[in-house]
Image 1 (spheres, rainbow, N blue to C red):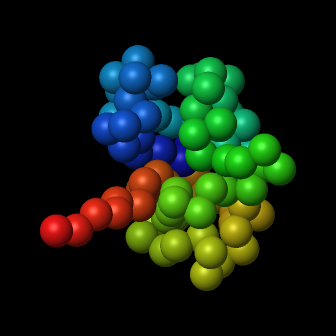
Image 2 (cartoon, rainbow, N blue to C red):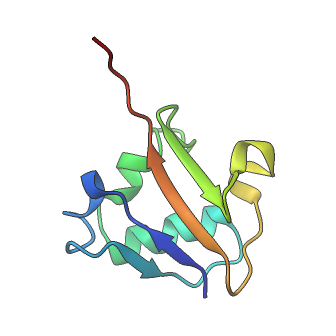
Length: 91
């Protein structure tokens, strides 16, 4: 079952858990599984059309899904998924 690392800003939705195991064949199913486990998290990851928000990066085994198959990226039993919110700022 793929594991998902939950970033600190979303941990209040995951019951303060930093990692979850979600049964899913691809990233799209993973997001739906996360929503069932952590209601409200999908709205933070996806926009109204269901697309991953511009400021959210998803990585499967350290590979950005934008350079793979997006939400259709297949997941294996031992894959690691990371949700990385973009950080903006400066001085």
